[in-house]
Image (cartoon, rainbow, N blue to C red; front, side):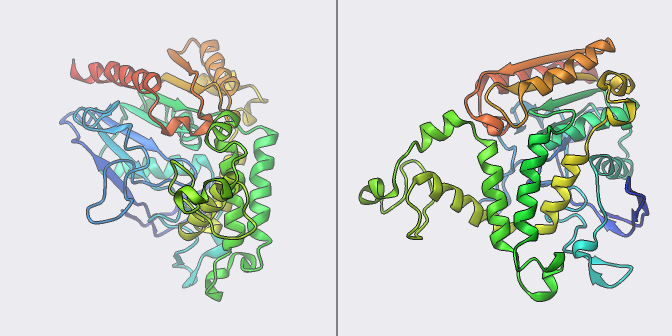
Length: 378
């Protein structure tokens, strides 16, 4: 959908003539009361569920969660996925031409925040004629957007489902993001963010950034169980260098351990489809998010504006967005006498657990959305 704009941004800049890519699933009911907005995390998109016809590896990033008969049941709900501004999957971003200059934005794309994304999503809902959301849902950075929705547009959200998220990033998380950004901006092919004009891509920096990020998404237990200290040479005779139970290989001679091969595979794959400037923009948006900042650092004061009912889910082995951070949100909401449900799942998968098929996790979300559905079916 094309928007003439301008959309005012928190940085003081604005953006005009921008496009938002989105997908919908299910049917909007006559009362327009069954809409659920799903907000994506760092490297995902508007393609939440389903499979694109005739395209390889085109399954939606939350296909196990969203669809007919699934926890977020599209036989009941009208689900909307929106690609955020600044992304590289269809919405206007650094790879696109700035209509004001006729040149590709590149590093000149304006700074965007979680709050800016929510404003853009609200503009899309306005255009679709949806005044109130039955729910807004997201994991990780998507969970931050869901939380922000309840503060920016409290009267437009009845429920918020916040999974594996936090009210802000810890200093350690910001540090991981900064190291990843430095890997990108110091790549000789980055060219100050205007690498498009040079016909190159800073793949080395993107590879390292993804490797750093991927380490933080997995738990130590999962990495040990999956890879341990297995050498590539130990399995090469069995499956031509491909580790058992995986679909990756890396042929460079300096790769000795299977975990090295796995990380390089993930880095290579990421560098082929993700935009470097988008990575910088989105990780900065993560760093900046802090609803308590304008309330003296008091989260309870910030969340006093929320009117929605909440479900929060965390995972015990998620050290990037630990359960402690979700409990901070729960406490702040309870301080304001808000309706809150909380589940802490003892899953082994680390931060990535929010994307995986844990029966307890899926059951919690399914039960919650059955409750949400009853409200508009009465």
